[in-house]
Image (cartoon, each protein chain N blue to C red):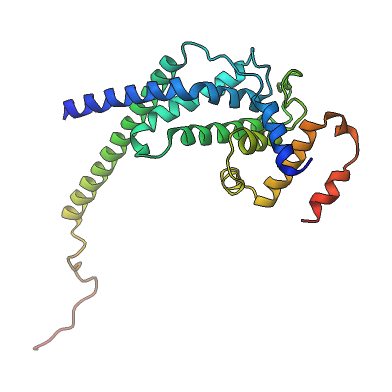
Length: 82
Length: 167
């Protein structure tokens, strides 16, 4: 048998017995799929909420700590004009 | 916005129903071949198919013109591969039913044979899907084909193996 005949023979063997489909399959798939979708939506919303909370927290911290302002000197500044 | 959402939901439900009506039979047949169960009693295949269809339903809006059957088939194959790997060597692992045509094959051989021969997926795509080199997929497919066509040869030490190794 060459390759094409072998493959055709295997395909015939694989296709031979059809399997009956259970009746409630569609309903269950829709139910579980909807649950997956709801959970995904919830996860997205939670992550966005977390991101917004982090942004707000960072803004509040920046307004209070003001890291762009030079801190007061820790050593005595040089004395001039005496 | 609610109307748009409702119409989108209705469209998704309609299209998914048509998809299940058309494709569930073939997907279930593929799953039964994968699990190596008898055609009329295949609880594991049904347990494989249900999350596959749920996943396809959940991804329906994001498919955007891709083939839902291909999405389902890909998920089915990867899920079976994960489960088979997890149950490898486990106590109480299910044995293939002797009435299944693929009863004598290992899970990986079943997977590659079903994808290549039953589903007609090309070799490169199968290799990409399973994360294997193309030559290995080719070798496994040849070996599985030989085993299915000539079951008695399973006990003979690999004269076929030398031909494959020279590639």
